[in-house]
Amino acid sequence: MRRISLLLNIAISTILLTIFVGCAINPYQKVDLETAGNLVTEARHSVSIARNENAKEHASQEFTKAEELLQQAESMMEKKSGEKVVDLAFLADMEAKTATAMTREAKAKYRIEKAKELQIDSLLEIKSNEAEIAKARQKIAERVALEAQINSEMSSETAENRVQNSQVELAITKAEMAIKNSEQMDAEKYAKQIYDESIKLLQEAKTAIAEGNFEEATKYAQDALRSSENAQIQAKAKADAEFADTMRKKERALVTIAKAEVAIEEAKASMADKFAKNLYDQAEKTMQEVRSSYDDGDYEHARSLAEQTRVSASSARAVVMSRERDEKAKDELEEIKANALDMIARAERSITQAFNAGATDLASELFKQAQDSLETAKQALQSDGLDKAISDAKDSIFNSSLAIATSELKSGQQKKNIEIENTLVEEFGKIPDVNVRNTEKGIVISFGIDIFDKNGKIKKDFLPNLKAIGESLKKYPDYRILIEGHTDDSGKKDADMFLSNNRASEILIHLANVEGVPIDRLSSVGYGSLRPLGSSSDSDGRKQNRRIDIIMLTK
Figure 1 (tube, rainbow, N blue to C red):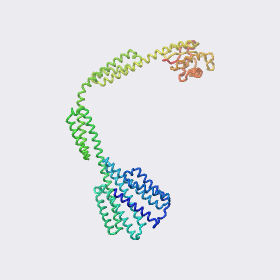
Figure 2: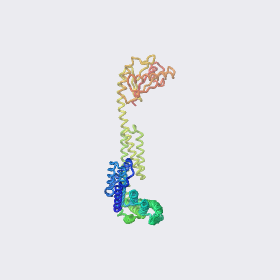
Figure 3: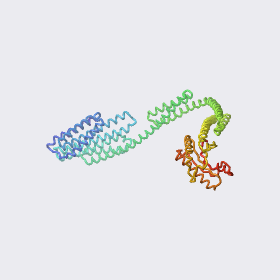
Figure 4: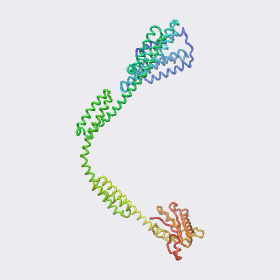
């Protein structure tokens, strides 16, 4: 590689010398500065890529030469010598690309040493980079041939022959490089027929050029190039398929080996090496064979042996686990039975506590459920249904606890309600012209319908009474308030129902809008003559029936 690079540098130097010496004899064709500038930009980009690839370390000569040529091109650009800029920038670009390709090739080789599993991909990358190197050098060779033709003092016929010879040799070089690449891709193995054909065509090309048959030699060289490229394609496809198949086999083997190793570790952790020694030893022995087959690349055999290893290790662990289960069964059974007895005893204590808390009255349904669950738990214990006994006893404890909590809550609420009801009876009893009584619904405040005028509006004289009622109602925001309207049976039923509804609504509106009682606590209804308090046969009874009841629902 370094020898080729040296020859390349000599060729480049020769070209540069020819360029500068030939200026006085054969002036360059005029080149516009914009085209020259574009070539300099392209060369800068190539040099930048080579620098980023660290080409200075892996291809120092080529990279240094590229930088020098680029500097010369930039210098000529400042002098506005477009013709010289073109050649210098072209050569700088080719040297930079060569350095980049050589660097990538070196890196790929390094990766091969570090990761054998990726060898095929890396080789393909090397071949690709070698192809880039060849292309770059071919372009330089073409440039050399062209400059030789332009600057030579030889006859046009001789120059033409040399150019043709150079072109044929270039075609042969391309074919040789392609054949070399196909060899590196194992074309002799994967595409032998096409590979042999490319060798034959290359030999025909060399024979033709030796005889001076340039056209024929070029055709053979081009055919050899195409044939070798086809060999590369076919070889790469087959190699990729073979590599992919190998990787799949390797991956499957690794997965199975990992499972076998886990099975051995689990077996050893369960002390299978002591209590199931034969099976465990067999697993260990087979695992050694697994590793040997894997190292030899026989992945399918390694996978088969690994599966045998896993089965042996799992069987050894199963033997130990079965033995342990048998030994623990009696202890566990006794422990479960003791737990069932303890749970039933706790359930009995919970039911007693619920009974003492008054759950038979305040939470009768829950208390009954607790008793039923306790009974089924005892029956399950007698028939050795230990799990059911424990489960039913837990249900009994839960229902007993819930019954106790419910009883305590209701008992406390009852006490609170009694205290509030006594307070309400006392407060409302101080309001003039009202009657207060404690009913199954709650505290009822009653007053006659004579508080309404002939238009059905509340008389002003009774407004202070309603104000006092409203103030007391607002003190107890936890209770809803029902306003009932009632009449005697002296009128028609429909008319009485309508009248009682209107009067109850009038009181509701006043309490909400005037006295400030939240309307969401209030509701009203009219019963007409359906719910009398007194007898309808005398005037006192009928007067008692014509009333408004404000009920605080404390129950």
